[in-house]
Length: 350
Ligand code: G3I
View 1 (cartoon, rainbow, N blue to C red):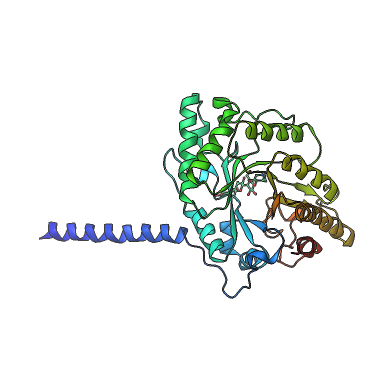
View 2 (cartoon, rainbow, N blue to C red):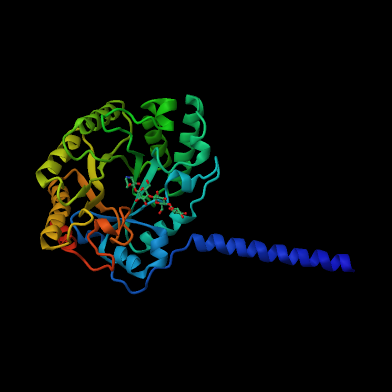
């Protein structure tokens, strides 16, 4: 009798524990946003105006959640789709965090950009702690891309398939992918993404390539080779992390767009932010310079048929990846708009 009771108790404990685990998993997949926030219809701006969004901030900070709901028509999960989060152990995929953002963004009518399928940063230990043969790496890469893109098929409009493949001098960064496969890793990633969701728009995304440089030339050359090889690439993402005192002008950005448009590719400004150096006063002059930096990218995009969107990298200064001291986003730490917010809207008037 006593044995029976012990077994029953153990059974009950197991059921309760399983229930708790299931609820925790469900909660992780959920993001409840503030109710009653007016959200812009998709055609509010001449191009999708996007923002990078963090799950932790969206849950803990109502000003932040309200900010991205109210001001933007496109959303990029800032970290939640990166390899270390979605495939922390080989072959084990965890989409809970990304799902939470993607579902909430789509419920609010936003386009979603997927960032990113391959990058040499934010990779899990199992992938970086040894070297792989070309065949092993091709297998790992194809599995990862197929599973991730397949999971979001029809829900994520665009993917940064390859992020930051080039070094400053224009050579291929020696990532785990490049070490095993050379440039062919890029072809493989795009091919796998296209097979997993033929309708998703596929981008090559690069940092610090807005000003004329060896790196920009190398990016154009890489894009040209991909197109020539028939790789299913749709566009190039120019990140445009910049500062108020050095932001590229509209003319420079228009020339950038034209270089890729000539190859038949789309362009997006995928990670725009315009910092004001720590210690500089956030006075009218600096706010105006920052607004000009934002407007330059938006106006260049607006003026080119090949430019399909502009995404700001961070909802407000409190949560910006640069830290609040850089004051890099269009909204202050308390969510109030700076002149950059109006400048973006003005430049993207339909
Ligand atoms: O999630 C962990 C958390 O568990 C831990 O307690 C905490 C302690 O530091 O770190 C958290 O992870 C951080 C993560 O952001 C989420 O906040 C990482 O340390 C931090 O390194 C990571 O930074 C991200 C960075 O990419 C990684 O290099 C930034 O948020 C993200 O904005 C930034 O975004 C990149 C783009 O993906 C590619 N282009 C450049 C851009 C800016 O660096």
